[in-house]
Amino acid sequence: MADLPRATSIRLQWLRPLALAVTLVFASGNNPAPIPGAFVGFDKLAHSCIFGLLATLLLRVDAVWRRTGWRGWLAILAVSAFGAIDEWHQSFTPGRSVEFADWVADTTGPALAVTLYLNWGWYRRLMETPLCLRRRKADPVKKRTDCF
Image 1 (spheres, rainbow, N blue to C red):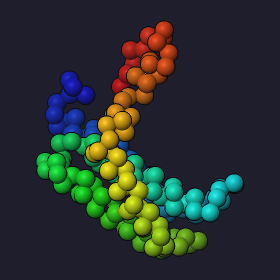
Image 2 (cartoon, rainbow, N blue to C red; image 1 turned 120 degrees about the vertical axis):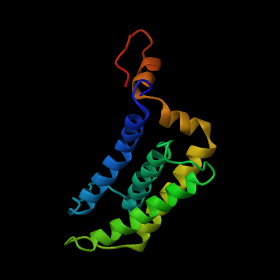
Image 3 (spheres, rainbow, N blue to C red; image 1 turned 90 degrees about the vertical axis):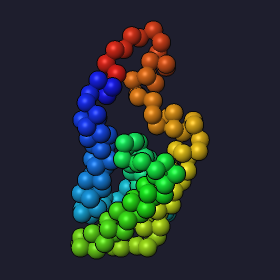
């Protein structure tokens, strides 16, 4: 993205969090199929992971967050509010229920993800390294130039 104009680059940074948010809205509007072999509390773990990913993707939109000390709190607050709205949205879907525990998971997942992203370099490097570079390290003989 280095050779793109700044405004285009910022718009592209918003693409991933918006795509995930739209996917979550559509998924919460449908009845979930039972997952075979899922353990008790699997849905809470899924909520934490998905909403944590959303918070991490929001943190990566660097041009939006002018106050670096507040960006973690803003991401947690935004994703928590989105989780509350998502739970409210589910109340209109037949076969779905609103659970306070889901919203708690929608908030604690982002809090953990934001803490990891801002405080531990290994997690940030993991999130920032493009997949094609990871593949290149795993298979150094193979030459890859299609990294995006």
